[in-house]
Amino acid sequence: MVDLVGATGLSFWTYNNPTFSEKMRIDNNHVAIDRNTSWEVDAKNRDLTMNSLSVDLNGTLYDYTNGIGDINNQIVRFCPNPGKKIAHDPNNILRWYKAIGYFENAKWPKQDQAIVQKYLPLLNKIKDDKKTRYELAGLLTLKNSKKVFRLMCEMGASKYLNLSCS
Image (cartoon, rainbow, N blue to C red):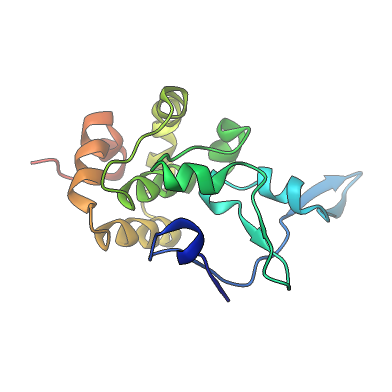
C-alpha cells in the first residue's frame, strides 16, 4: 500500500493493489479478453485523472494524466473518452460527484459537466442497483456531502435517482 499524502497533501488518498484494466469482447461467438499491459494506456482508461495514478514496486509514482496537478489544484477531471465510459457504466457519474466532494473548493472543466449532464438520464436505469446504492452511500460520508447533493439537485441528477432536494 502506498500513501500519497506526502505527494499531494491530501490525507484521504491511499492507493492499494493497482491492477490493469481488462475488456471483454465477443468475436465470432467466442469471448475474448483484451488485457492491457501498459500502465499509461491503463491510466488513460480510468474514470478520473486522480484515479489514474500508479506506483511501481520501488515506490515511483507514475502520473500520465496530470492527476497530481489536478489534486493539488482541486480539479476533478475525466480521463479521455468519458462519454463512452459513462455509457458503459453510469456509476462513473456518481464517482465524479464523489470526487468533487473530496475538495473544499472543487473545480471541474465545463465540458466535463456538460458530459455528465448529457448522460444523467442513464442514472434512472441503475438507480436500484446494489453498486449504485454503494456509490450513493459513499457520497453521504464525504465532508462536503451537502455541497455534492446540492450540485446533484442543481444539475437534475436527483430526479433520476429519486432523491429529494427539499
